[in-house]
Amino acid sequence: MREQCRLGVCDEEDDNDNRIDKADVLVYLSTRWYARPKVRYKPSIAQFTPTSSPELDKLLDTIRHKIILPAYLPTDQRKKMFSPKYEKKLQSDPIIIEIDGEVFKFRYQNPFKDIPQTRRSVVNAVSRFEAPEDFANLRPLIEGVAYAQRHFDPSFYCKILRVLGAKGRIFDVIELARGVARSGFRLDSSEKVNEVLHWVQMKAVDADWDPAETAQAFRWAEMVLELMQEENHLPKRHKNEYLLKGELPLHRDPMVLLAPLHLAAALVSKQGAEADEVVVDKLVKYARDVVRLWPQGKKLSEVQPAALYEEYDKMGYLQEPNKYVVITAPLLRGLEIAIEALETRNPDLAAQLRSRRDILSAEVKEALGKARGNRGKAVYEKLYNNAA
Image (spheres, rainbow, N blue to C red):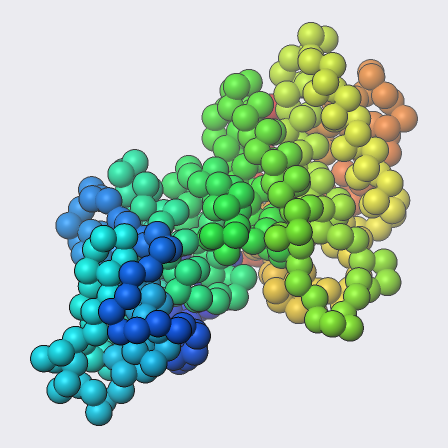
């Protein structure tokens, strides 16, 4: 189930969503604070505004009171809150804190029965977002659980961004990444980056390549590239962990660079001879970068070292054919458009792109034939039924 949910947006929870997360409990008990039981805190607390449904309001309120607020308690008070021996005492004499002028009372909570599983609760809440007033709560929700020192594996963030992408809110994800210091939403893995860029490209596809929508998508793709190079988004490595021989930094991976290439090519293709020279220059730049970094004769899946494909959270997620089609089908279409756009402007560069296109086309078709699940096929058909 976990693998299936990673492959696309699904309504079923994966295994992580259905079990008590003991790590959640440890977080409650580990954060160090030094203060008296009743104190005034300076940090702003997550505030949720009314949503479009009472059920969502209730869910957000539960997350706030059960998951986020306990993080504001000093360590000794938080331990009391979860200790059975203080249950009776806290019933009559609760722990009291004041934050931003709001007073909160904390009584005993059984960490294994009374506290909701964080991952499942957050995904459930975001899945229920529909109206603009719902999405207004996204930032305080993600920042709130980050402040509560919840640490998630990359699959959690990929799940969130897939849900938001399917709802047409991929820019909300980019905004979370821009506020990484508070949100913890880092563009530090291949899957996260390629999923974001997938939805950015599909924004233009879904708009039938409307020039304004495509130009906006192109700006967003370049924004993602810029964010990836900021220190807060660089992949964390162990003390003695270095790049493998032949490993390219994430922002120099051709698989990543092909996304802005796709969107730049679509803009130039739509505008024809009147294409903006700035965009043409960027198209040429991305094309040259791709050709330089993607050796001729190699499959796209062979550009990065094979060892990275042995770990799911690095490149291993692309071993699943369905996921490979989802990520690379838009890139294949982008190469085709770029070749057409550069044919008369730079025939040598177009020819070099064509050799890569031919290899990727064979890869995508092979993966499409092996894919289980409908997401890859749906993406492929949408791309070739909405050609730029």
